[in-house]
Every structure is written in C-alpha cells, then in structure tokens.
Image (cartoon, rainbow over all chains, first blue to last red; front, top):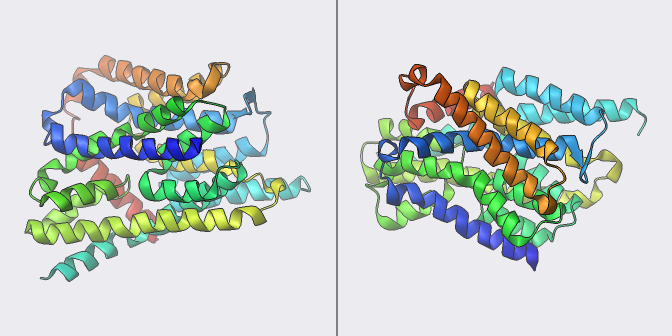
Length: 105
Length: 254
C-alpha cells in the first residue's frame, strides 16, 4: 500500500512539474536566472547522489572495493566516449559479468 | 503533408533512442523485483510517473527505510529538471490546443525534449507539430513501460548471485555523464556522490535528498565564481539539449 501511495504522489508531483514551465514562465527566458541555473545543477547533483548511494553504499555501510567499482569505471569511460545510454549500460554490465565469472560465481 | 506523415517522421527520429530506454526499463524492472517491491505497482509507476531517475530514487529511499514523504520528495527533487524542459517547450506547446499541450507534457522525457527543434523546422503548422511530437514521445514511453514489464517478468529467473542491483549505478552513470557539460555540473555531480556517502548515517534515506541539494549548491557556487565567463555561454536549454539528443542519436545508430 505504501509503495502505491509513493508512486501515485510522485506521479502527481512530477506531472505538476512537467506543466509548471508551460503555465508559469511561458518560455525559458522569463525564468529567473537563479532558478534556471539551480534547475540545471539539480540533475547532475541528484544523479551523482544516486550513483553514490547505489554504488558506494550497501545497506548503509561502505561497499568494499570490487567488481561493482570496476564496472562503474568502465561505464564512466564508455559514457564519456560515446554518450550512448544502451552502450554504457551493456558495456558496464558485460565488464561486471566477466569479473563475476573470473571470481567463479 | 499529413498528420500521419508528421507522426511517422517523429517515430523515425526517435527510433535510435528506444533501445537505450528499453534496456533502462529492463534494469528498473529487475530492480523492482530484486528489492521486493510490489511488481504491479512497479510496472504502473513507469506508466504514471514516466521518469526513471525519479522512480529509482523513490525505490532507493524505500529500501533504506524512508517514509512516504521522503521517498516522494526524493523523486520530485530528481525530477525537478522537468521544469526546465517545460519552460523550453512553452513557446511551441503554447500554440497547441489544451488537450494536446497537457497530454504531450505528460509524455516528454530527457531524451525527447531536444527533438522539438527538428519538429519545428520540418513541420510548419502547430497541428502537424503536435503529431510529430506524439511520434517522438509515444515510442519512448512505450519502450520504457515495455522494458519495465519485461524486467519484472524476467526478474525472478535471475539468480541472486548475478547481483542485478549493479544496473542502478550503471544506468545513472549513463544518464549523468551526458548531462555534465562543464565544471559546474561536474562539481555538482561529484559533490552529490561524495556527500551521499559522507551523510550515510542520516536516517530514513534522507542522505539522497541532502546530497542532491548540497551538490546543486556546490555547482551553483562554482558557476557563480566563473561568473562573467559563462554569461556568453548562456545558450538556451533548447540548443543544448538538442545538441545532446543529436549526439545520442548518432551514437545509438552507429
């Protein structure tokens, strides 16, 4: 039940954000400069936080260095090189799979 | 010059991006399963929220034991960038009829917002532009929802030893790197990454929200310091996201 409520509220809030610019600003130039700059920064900042949370932490403790980190490095290199969503994910996953197999899992 | 041709043109322009979003959806679906989230709710979330980064943030907070309010807040902070897209699309969408405007706003994503410039160039009337944007957005949302459903269905057959959770950092690396266009964005991302670990003992998954806000502030400060230099670089979001979409497009189709 809790998860349904979260997704429904997130859907309503996200839709409100999606139409906010159409309703409030009419076009990007009418947006206050500080708001515009803050909105540009929040994407990279939030994604950095999610990468940190899911990669460097494991159930609240720091994850020991291993295959996860190496796969992430490979993904960063691929993303910087090609900027392709599919290639980055598949390449990172392939590196991770090879490392797991090497460990004999 | 028919509405059908405009729709087909949009579909063609976005086709190269759909495999990427489908893989992202597949990973999100597998994540839903591996985290023990209600699979129906997980699939519905892709349909109704339609923004993978925000959905994943909410799931991560739930897994960390966060409350409903913090999970929703995390999703909305991650999705705040849509306000920027919305403002960028306002001049074009302002000429659409109300149902089209409100409907298309619901479907726009990180990958599709940049394509509106192409649509405006090729299709001259608002009536045809509506169909172009529909052709751009519908395949992406379909790929996202379809990928999620497939990931949820395949999730249980994936052995635990595969550690499927690794797809979460991978997909956010894939999304974040192209959004880093200069030093301020890089500082914002690295600060968010470091802060979420430094603040790991905050209760209820609050560290994600706090780290995102710290990263945003750090990015703004660097941007401020760069000051005068970046005034000239104030290209509209339209131009920058469009350039990005073109790059992704060519990268995906090679």
